[in-house]
Image (cartoon, rainbow, N blue to C red; front, top):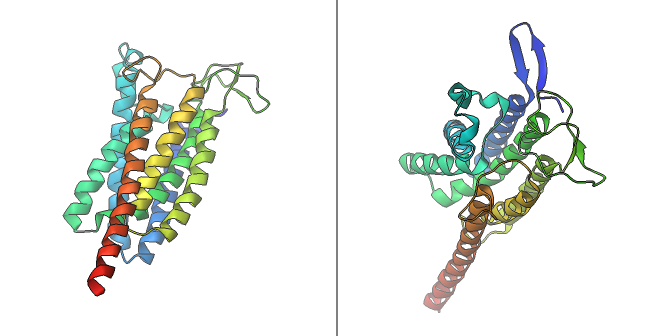
Length: 264
């Protein structure tokens, strides 16, 4: 594809970096819009997303370096060249989750309500960012002969050149765009706060674990060689997410039943 969008003298604009920035801005704008409807200030949401941005980039890069440590042994400085691609979503997600939890507690915001506001925005930002992965050639798929297979020819691409590959980056982008609409529907029909966020965890974990079966890039092993790190984390989080959705719905129904009995 086109890892480098354009060069102007010594200035180079990388397509990957551009889409990561667009994803972040899109997520912030969407989250602010949702926050306004729920009585949360724009400044608080912007601060939260700035914290999420910084912590997620650091966490995503750290996990990528850990999983692909051999790539950096001969050139340690390349650890900091994130504009070339090389971020593991779950590393960023876990780091951002911890940072966001501390921020929400410090500001006295409602945890479940805030998480529900942020979840669809994260899916939107992730979808846009995956388009950047496609242009950079990172997170590429296995070889295939499907009609929609893609072939990378740019020498700056991180994907193998001149072979037909699964467009796994596009699979993820489309899945995340679909997830945005699913989460909006869930949020409008939820019975209690927190359900939207945990449904996001469940759905994305399952979706990611499935798409990982088509990946062709080195991704490390999770306990066994049959699972990649992201695939293993996805399965675990999907199970946790489903458990939490069921728990919250049952807890809410139980609370409502108790209230009805008291009124009687």
